[in-house]
Length: 555
Image: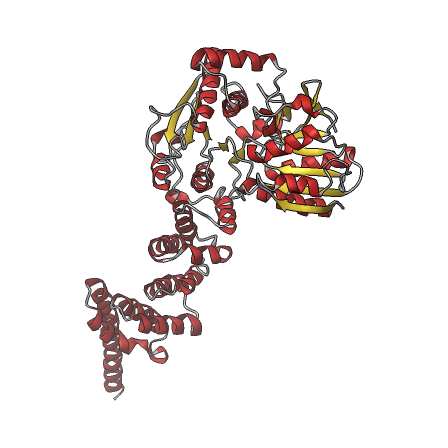
């Protein structure tokens, strides 16, 4: 009898073992069907294994593969519901696999935020990297720059996200201040193999890329430019300084590019192989071109210098962007510091032209003057026909005393300067008047007639005409071009000499470090330069004519 029961028991055990083996085979066969592309059949075979009470841990694997099959079959909502149940209600040992698959499911439904959120929960490095790759593949094709910028703080650790955003920012010609800060923050981030920065070539040569809008009025090329082209005049000065540096034994290579005032041309220029070794970029000048180059320079860690502008707009967060001239804020600060030491009273009359720089500087001046306790009695935008009325209204007229303690005029316009100087020739005033140094170069100005007036010139990389180096440069320039240098030719020469002295094979090519070591330096032609801890020239002399000689008034 016992033998009979033993046979029955053994038979039952073998039956249960066979059933279990068949079930295992059904699960394994379903997984193989997924990889073979038979999704519907695979899902049918997996359904019995979804019962957790009957299959325990095996059912969790079955749920994952069921979701995988649904995803491959474009049944995204079914895949999402299955994975959310698996990850939310069970403690599954391969949770990272589920999170990665759920990421793909969300991306397939264009639910980028939810997909990115899953990647941030993944612990394993291998699947995390796969998540980064999936992020880049999806976001670079489907996400907008505004979406990526808006969620930068939440997902900046996702390298695929960061790379996709970086590429989109660099492709734009105009960036918001927030986008510029993001691009600057990316500067020191390791984005792995996907980094789009140009591979840098190091050598002992000073490689300079000159990127200027030679044909700012249309056209192409530089061979037919006329002498009255102010950009070409700037380049003549740069070229003279390059020749001087080479004559002193410096190894320097320069390549010139014409932007033609076209953004598409600027983008093509920046693809030139020369930029893989460039140590410095000179130019461009105009805001829309400058923003493109600023982003490129930031990404590739190449300093670039705008030779003529005083405006830092578009430079926020751009640690490789420089102005050769003082910024509007530096000029404002210098005037107010000088006034505090030399001018009695707090009443100011402010006039400014309609140029972008002058309007910006006037706003900054008004704000800063108010903070320092000054009172703007007059604050007026002027032109050639209204400047004389402005002066007369504040009391600069025969038989009157000025009703203010100082007058500030922000303008490089000769048609504003001419009537102002004409009035001062016939009317002496003891009220200090601050104007830009450009007024010194107007050929109609007769400064001998201005004795007795307190007329001060605010330096803007002002050329020191008393220097022997200036006279030598004028002579050499005339010998070569058969004309004397204009204002921009002086600036170009001073700029290139400064660059060659700052970065070279003896001092090294770390532009920022070398600038901080320089402090105040004498310009080749100008009164001075100071870029210590600054991205624009902080040396802003206040000048006054004394017996025909231009003198700097010290604080």
